Image (cartoon, rainbow, N blue to C red):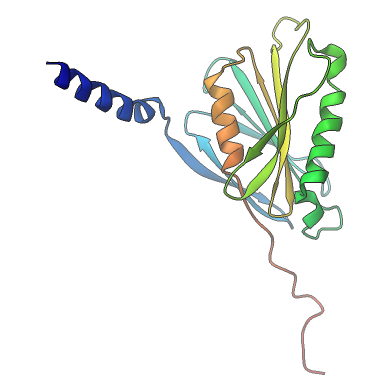
Length: 196
């Protein structure tokens, strides 16, 4: 009887990640003139895309299918000159960007300093932090998780707003960032025609 219980426990432990997992889909976001960003997004999340004028980066916002438990915002940032910028993916560049972002949030936070955590995935690496809003207004979120990762020369900035520090949605959002992929635009062939 004890042996059957042990087998049952093993099966339960092995199946738990499958039961806890949520279906995802790979969604592509064309960045006109700058390639394509791909994110593996929980299928139940809805999205909206905000495209500013000119050549400014868009912001992709994710939220639950219903309710307001969280908001996730992702903004790809590229070199204004239009070229892939390897410096955007450098750990020192990303760390400095995230530290500056975090320091601007401290005036309204319970925390008195920013504690950076590393985030890495198959094609990205960066940093993030989480802070607690000292006095969130009605309808606002208590926790802010923000950071950035370098993805093949693209800087991917992200913000996750939740009311629970141990939110499954926060974990899903961080997983989505870890799995991000970027394909740079093909070089323009203008001015490269041969045969004089």
